[in-house]
Figure 1 (cartoon, rainbow, N blue to C red):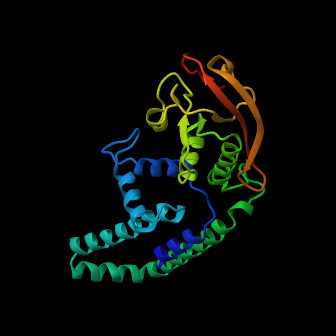
Figure 2: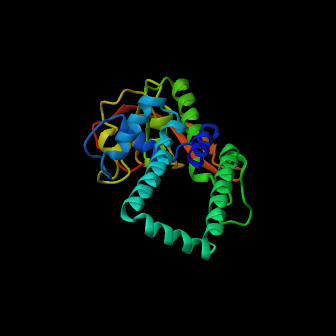
Figure 3: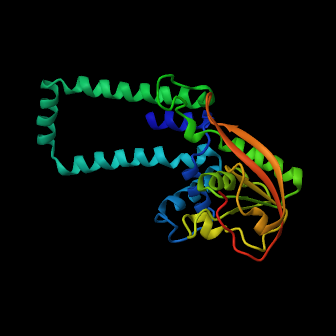
Length: 267
């Protein structure tokens, strides 16, 4: 029942994919026997789920409660195999004498209440804040990523850019997922001297990238852009709201005329 409630709740949730989830989805689009930081099973599971119900957030998250339910059934079967009826009888009698059944019912009740709270919370995540906490916008890590994709799409159409580049893994993972239906390349600007994530390895920004390029960064004044590109046009700042009281700040640039030198860090 709790699994069913969880699955239904995901359908009504407005919570964006956390950027790790977006990265796992990107892995699922490129079947392999290993990935940058993890074995392949998580990507295979997402790929299988996508074939069944599509690439929505709810579908990508659906395997988690289903596997949790399957694990619960496995634990039940193992316990039933390890202990005979006599042991089960005395165990049940002991539970009754200790009134453990009452606590079990309380635990089930708490579980149902928590799932109901998550159902409500997920449906109003963009308006939920708890004053007094260090991070009052409790959904902040999982909100604002769809808005980033929408704004990047708008800017790319505005300057007719076939390529979008950004540096941080959370930003590129979210752009790859939320721009999945657009025919634009989303590429990784190197943030360090070595390959530090999956996207820098599989989607590096190279000299052959189609121009103009829309660069999205958190830096107010990126260093070295004019050394790499002959044309650097600031498009201005924009924000994405990640909660009732928090935002993420971005800056956009139109790049063109790549020079034959290596890229350096944006900031």
